[in-house]
Amino acid sequence: MKKIAPGFLIGGFQKCGTSTLFHWLSQHPQIEPASKKEIDFFWVDSQYNKGNKWYLSHFKDQDNASEKQLSFEATPTYLFSEKAARRIFQFNEHMKFLVLLRNPVERAYSQFMAYQRKRSDQQKLLDSANKYDDPIHSFFKQLKNPSVFTDFDSHIQQEINALKTGIDGLMPFLVEQGLYAIHLKKYFAIFPKENFCFIEIKEMVQDPKMVLENIFHFLGLTIPDFQSWDLESRNIGDYTSLPKVETLRELFSFYAEHNQSLFDLIGKSYGWEVAFDLA
Image (cartoon, rainbow, N blue to C red; front, side, top):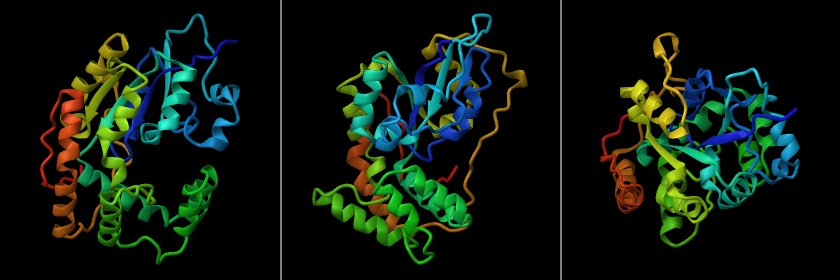
């Protein structure tokens, strides 16, 4: 029986609300979510080598009597990978993307804290390591050592210095993932801009129904009655401390030009300021 292959993807970025949006969209009567949120198919070579049949096994069979029209998954790191863009195009050249964005200064610290929380469950950390290829595999294994990757401020400084000298790929890409325009341009070279819908995380917090209505219009789906929907946020971090003010200022300064490039690229400004709000 034919599968309900994904017609759209939540493509990113990490710590921008992908878990929440996955949960919200899964409640639409015309949408069938994948069996798990993140499949990591198009960017992890060991997963991609399992083939399309393995990928499609994460999606349900098409039932002619069902309302379901679309399926999807949410792997935030797809938009960070140029090879994922090429592979997605080969899979479905008409694929649509929901792109979640967040003030990159806040996003970087949120990602750092997420890695710190991973240390609390060593088995889960090992499972995460085995899910990926190197260098991510090795990075997760290193996190088993409680003294590794504990200083946000020094790591940010190292990554900024590296990026300024033309060196990228410094795990775990806390700063590099926030260079949204650079990553999106790689996708725009393959897919038309009309295939992308942009959502900023604060829009989700302030007016979830408006965000969902815009998404369903973008996907060509009916607007449901949200009365019975669960629109609570998911996977919210608990932040008991903040980085040094100097680090935040340096990050803000580093991102200023890149943020403007993003706003010019997508024709919309989010006015990200140095104000640090971990929503």
